[in-house]
Amino acid sequence: MSWRERPGSQLLKGLALALALALGGCLQPLYGPLANGGSLESELQAIAVNPILPDRIGHYLENELAFAFNGTGSTVVPKYRLTVTLRERVQTPVIDTVSARATAATVIVDADYILAPAAGGEAITKGTAFSVASYDRTSQRISNVQAARDAETRNAKVIADAIRTRVAAALASRG
Image (cartoon, rainbow, N blue to C red):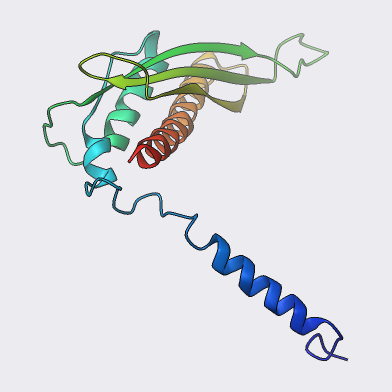
């Protein structure tokens, strides 16, 4: 017996159709036109990213965010300012029992962000994005340094994507 022949299948089809029609107006594409007629792309391009500290990871994240918001390279008068504060820590979960050295490490980065109007005022959105990247450690020091940098770069890309998506959702819902 197929699902079309089961008793009550017409009722299930009817309920699914009614649910789809009821929720049809609730969903809005993230990158579609805004309620005020503008485009989300132009709103994202008008975000200025404040300098992010500390060290390399801040530099990587700042570059990733600048490209994520305005990959065109065009100069736009900023309507919004994004402030990001980073916390980075390294954990070594695996220790070799013979050499007593870490054989792996994990770079964990938390990024607190606040998007506010450039002219000042109440924050539009704020939150925390995080990323975790692991790498293997060897007895060669330069390899460990490069692997740690690669982990920071991976973390910066993941965090930039998360912040861009959350900021885009906040601006789209704002209209």
